[in-house]
Length: 297
Image: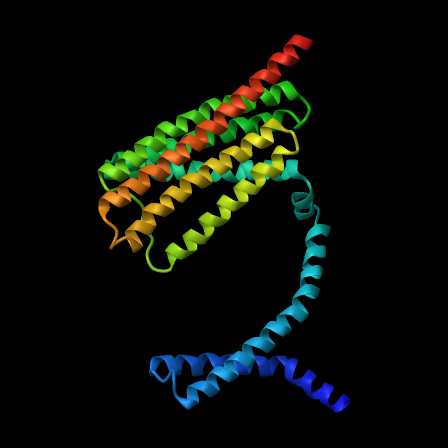
């Protein structure tokens, strides 16, 4: 009985050098099979079996070793004073995020402004203004955070958050201009080759992350932190619109142009409505709370 257990253990947990060797062989053999069109030959069946076995033992090895490395890396990350604080302190994380986003927005403003001047087109000018508005809102929040600790002045946070909501309404004007140029002048974004898949994955990630943060940080009860996440979510939604234009350019050859324009108009309108609803909700809620605080004083 022990002999069978040892055999199974050796089959399921071969040495690392053997797994690497089988991985290289399987990759080369599968490539040869598909390139030569031998998918149904007896040799191909043997290659499939070897490749399946290699994949299985590789996954088992990863499942066996990954948790140990994960715990070690996680412990080192949390032991570091900077990364540990970033992971455990939401206020500090928001502060770092505002600095990072503000820097990126300013770079986008510069690039689009220069492009608008060089190519003499309103397309880049629209996005220079869009990123400038985003940078202004993040600057206002960052300036407040630098001057006041979050949670120190509830009234100050409410006013700064409401101001950002008013400014956020301007984003709809820029978004409307961008959609009109997409529909009227067939403007959009293009990504070559595999880059479009990378951008799609990144866009879906930042959208999901922004939506999660929007819910998570609202529970903390800080208007400034919530405003920062609303701005992040708005920018993620606009990135989805940009990705849609790239998808049409890459894969929309069989789709009628009028249907593409309709989809862009619907997407742009949906994003604009979402931004307006978020901004109005912040303005109404913060105004009510500000009035109550002034009445009690």
